[in-house]
Image (cartoon, rainbow, N blue to C red; front, top):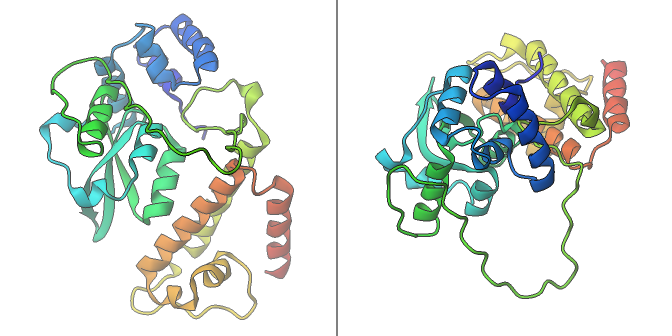
Amino acid sequence: MARKRIGELLVERGAITPEQLEAGLAAQRQTRQRLGVTLIGQGAITEATLAQALSEALGMPRVDLAAITPDWAAVHLLRARFCEQHDLFPYALENVGGKRQLVVAMADPLNITAIEEIEFTSGLKVSGRVTALSAVRGAILRYYHKVPVATGSRPAPARPPARAAPAPARPAVVEDDEEVIVGEELPASEKTQRTSLADLIREREEQAKRKRGGAVDKAKPKAPSSGGGGVLDDLDYLFGQAAREEPDRLEELERRFWALMRIMARKGLLTNDEFRRELDDESGEG
């Protein structure tokens, strides 16, 4: 099933008109900003309306960052620059079914790329909360940069000025124009080979989960087969055979493995042909 994007959800909820969406998409292609930011800047929608529409459409709770005290253990799990880039703020750790989750306030809860990177780097599943863009940026200023921020309704605060840095020894790497952030609006004609590969990897991950299913016994995992192949052998190579001894740890490592595959696909470090060839080799061995 195709994932919804912000523009589609807002039109379906009646928060904006199709004409406003088209105008926002046209401006977004020029500014490279997120669609939500663009629509707010154009006056097509308010922050509160955007957050409410996303919360209702996604069934995701809203959070008022001004009314909570963040857990510093959660805040320190992510860097300020990453939070600024994706307009999100980690503020709590919670236990669900005996497993820890990182609670993250997001202005764009459809930013799957950010969620996958957080889960890969932290090893924790993300539990998202919808909040206003200005609230996220205010929290980043207050808790990462120690800048006093007044609470209450206000326009989104400007990002802090970049600090001067010594000239790099080599030219800076230019961002790849083909990098796709899931959750942003892209015409169907602009869907790249990288996003197709990322979808293929996601499908393969789901197949692996179904295959593994309930095979992991909480008392004692099954011994690996001598035939080799599959994600478990890849995990053994990356993290060691001991990973299989703890089912919860295995699930965490497997989630990281597939997240890494998707990130590599989006950054062009893994081609469609390479991945399909590995799948064919694995099927032949099985």
